[in-house]
Length: 94
Image (cartoon, rainbow, N blue to C red; front, top):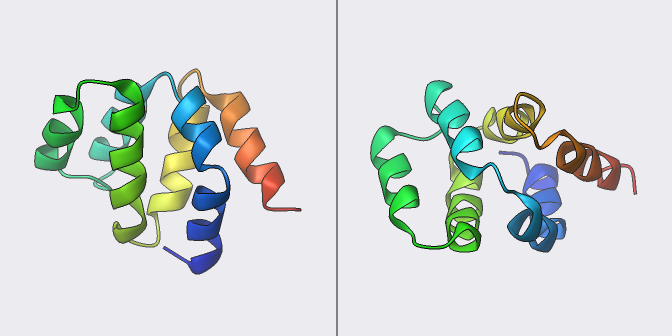
């Protein structure tokens, strides 16, 4: 993942932790696209709170290769999180 994408995830961390409600849908898409492994998915799903799951995902996502950021945003568009994707994309222009 490029430094600018890591910076966008850091800049939007609070918003992501608070507003990413379709965690399972996002993670299912990331697992399908080979961004996270099934073992990682199981570890993430074992965390008891949604906010904890999102925090852990944000911790591992930057290490998952150059496609990780774009597929992460793309997973929002394929689920109910499209407004969150727009917020992150618009913060890139700031």
